[in-house]
Image 1: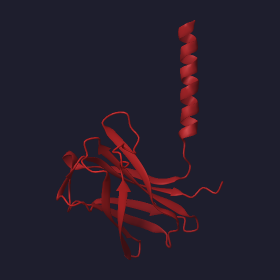
Image 2: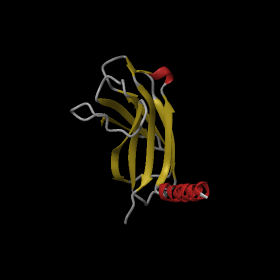
Image 3: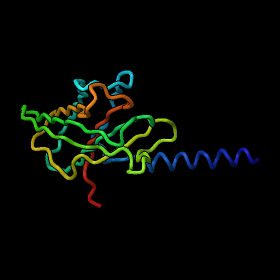
Image 4: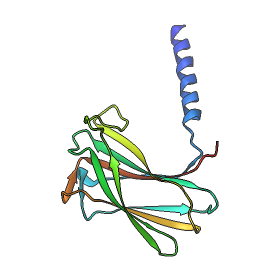
Length: 160
């Protein structure tokens, strides 16, 4: 009898979790693994983002998965966004991975922390089509160790 109650509670919690975690605002989300946890300064991670709605506003987010032995508290990135018409915009962006005391800001229980941070808020895309986002690390070492994955997310701005 106790096992039956336990399984009913477990299934109820799982169903609620699935419905709660559904996020209708996500337009695009993709992670790219860093080869052998060694990100060379010349390596670019490219994301092809299809945009059809030019009326809505969007948030752009950078997702980083780092090992807990990553030797820095931040990560400088060079980001270039190519519009469907070929025009590009370059930017430099800092992702803070740990607080001043050294505590990792990302989520995760094991040796990998996932940090999601806003890159741009409430922007619009001027034309419909495929946008290409290229991300390169801008740290001093030629080979950056301890970054597990690089990700990019586009979500519609919620007007609640």
